[in-house]
Image (cartoon, rainbow, N blue to C red; front, side, top):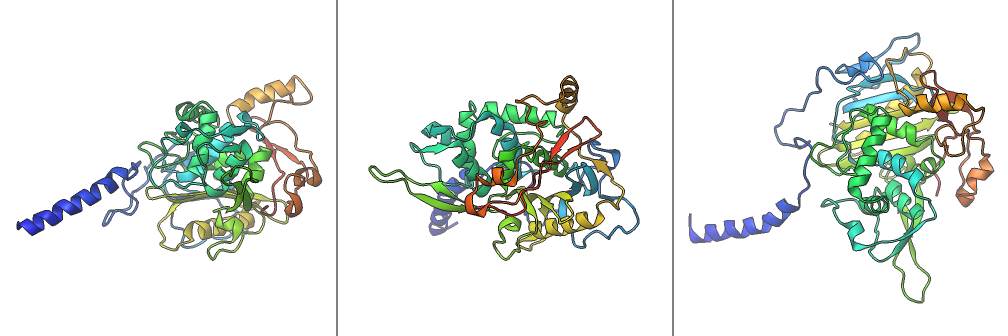
Length: 410
C-alpha cells in the first residue's frame, strides 16, 4: 500500500473511531442489517392470557359478521383488545420478546407517577443527566434549572425526553432503583415478557418487552387520571432558561404521536386518547394507542416494528387495527385476555371487607369526577370527559376506569 493510501486509511479510521464508540448498544441484530433474513418468532411463546397468544402467527377468532383483518399488516408483532373487558380480539406474535423503544416509558410512568407529587419542584444536578445513551431524544432539561414534576412528565409523554426520564429517576433514588421498581411492577402486572435494563427504553442488551406486555402497561396506566391527562396532551409549554431579573421564558413542545396530533401527513384518529410511540434503530417503530368510538367502545392496539418503508407505517397500521377492532368488537370470539395484576386479587379481598375502597387505593377508586372538574386542569381547550363508569372484570375484580379523553388537549 502506498504512503498516501496508508495516510488516508489512518485519517479515516481516526475519524470513525469516536462515532463507533458513541454508537448505542443493541439488544439484538440490527433491524436494518443488509442482506439479513428477517428474524422469526419462536414457535412457542408465553401463554399468559391464553394458549393461542403463545402461538406464532396471526390469531383471530370467528363470529357472524366479523370483518376481514386489514391487508398489508407488516408489524412483527401486534395485538388488538377491548380495553374495558380485556378481551384480545386478534393478535400476531403477541408474546414475541422484542426491543420496546420508548413505549417502555409507559411502564416507567405507571410505576413512578404515584410516587412523585406533580407540584414538587426539583433543581437539576449534573449527576441527574448522566448515563443517557448517545442520540437520545431530549425535551431540553438543563442543569441547575428548576422544574416541577408536572413539567418533567410532559417532557416524557410529549417529547419522549430521556433527559426528563433520568431526572425523574434521580428523584426516585436513581436509575438502578427505578429499574428494579419497574421490573417489580411489570411482574405484578404479569408482563412476564419484559426485562427492564434502562428506564427510558433506549436500546440496551437484553432489554425486551412484547405487544402483549405493552398493552398491559397502557391499560394499567390509563387507570390513573394524571397518566390519562399527560398521554392525551397534544401541546404544552415547557420551561426554558431562567434569566436573572426576568420572568422565565417557555417554549412549546408538541406530542410526537402523529395519530393524536395529525403531524407529518397523518390525520388525527377520532377519539384517540394516547398512549405512546417510540423509535430506535434496533426496535424500529413501536406504538400503543387507545381510542373510543361514538358507541362508547374502547379499543387498545399495540404495533411493533413494521417492515414497511412507509414513513407513517406504524400509525397507519395501528389506525387500521383500531378500525377493525371497533368493527369486530362484540362479534368476534376473543383469542385471549389481558390479565389483571396479581395484586388485583388482594385488592378484591380487601374491598370485600369494606363497602368503599380506601383513599390510597388508586386502582380501585371510582372515577366520578365531572367533566368540569377534569377540565379545570386544561383551560379553554378542555377535553370532554365521559362519566365515571366502572367495569369490573370477572378475573380478579380489576377495576377499569372509563374516563377516556376524547380529544387531544393543549
